[in-house]
Length: 204
Image (cartoon, rainbow, N blue to C red):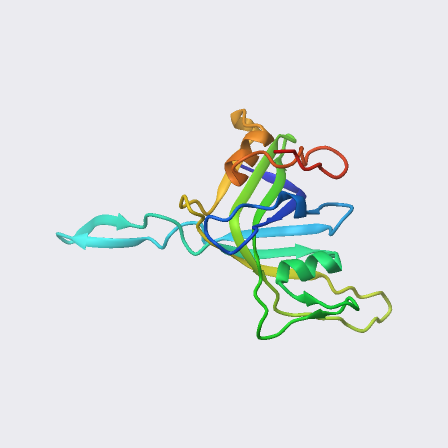
């Protein structure tokens, strides 16, 4: 499937770090062309390492079931400051200063990616359980042109209680966004990301 764009990314936090914890859709973070400006979501190591076992002087079986250590990176032009601190688990004091230290524990999120194919048919990618981290902060001096320092986070996926670690869906199969949300979140929690504006949290 040829994906030709990155329309939006939504992050929905879990209420706790327990593997069977519920999501808290009221605290979702929506990142799109008017908020955050996501430029790339990289998802890698989806498959387990394949090993060939030989017997009788020939390849007998290829072993590689299950998933790999699903991980990747997430690039944005301008991650809103408060949302960035929340995702990384930084503690913000009364003066609005974010603190990061040896007690920092980043929370778990479900990551929901909205893309589309070459014909504009929607496609969705989801990682049910991720934890984000940040390596570098790299402001640079301006020269003849203004130099910007964009945000890059790395993340690592974890299996949720039912064993899933990655989901993908496409309108090519007749799948709807509501159906994909139900598969990723357990229920449809937000109105469509495909529309204009901020989605509303559904009741119940």
